[in-house]
Image (cartoon, rainbow, N blue to C red; front, side, top):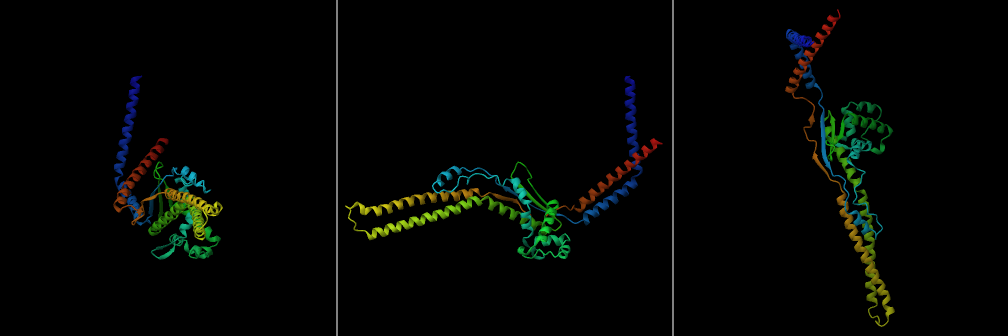
Length: 355
């Protein structure tokens, strides 16, 4: 039994060696065909790489400060209790703009539309990005035939303008724009735009980042900014009351400088004014304290957006160097020719066995 197994193993190994040897001999006999095919395929690949339109990628990466709860919330709440202003949540982190939400903000129609309708000064003068996009993508004539001109004021734009904008935005989101976190554990965000038009790619990327980050900063600090506005108004109002009371007290003392100190009732008006000054002064002092704390919180609540890399010329492109395209094309051609001839031999062997 053991001798039979050994014999079968030798026969199997011998068959494999025979087939491999036969395959090598077949490849050697077809070296001219492989040589010619390799150069043809390699030449076609090389020509394609040299003649195809280059895609340029403009990329911006930046760090977003993580939301963190501040320690000023309780302090502000206790200080603001005298004024009736809700400052308790000023120092608390908000979950509205986590980084995943910011990614969706970059892909939102509102931000994309605002970017496309922004005027930039490119090689052909100042124009809106949507106009440049239409010209570079051979859409300008079609839009003109439909009576669509994006260089008109936004107030004059109609429904058909929005329809075209929505189509363009969908196309850009599908083919050109990429917004992602390179590392899910970090707060680094990457925004990339790819286009065959190098100046347009750079301008679109920079404009989109500017609009989204400005909107993010404005929205993130809107609540604290509104509280500062209310506190400033109330502080000014209390200051006016204090000034008015001080002035009234000074006038009363000037007009009644010779009051009889033995008549206590004559001192009541001036005592009331002094109490008013003390009360207004105490409230004004607390209001100023609250206002300064609110300003500090407002500054602390402003998120840090630190740009790491900006798009600079020349932009990153997908065009291979000529020598890389030549070498890769030849290797690809050789592999494809050998694979094709191998499949042909297998097919012939299968037919022969059937016969």
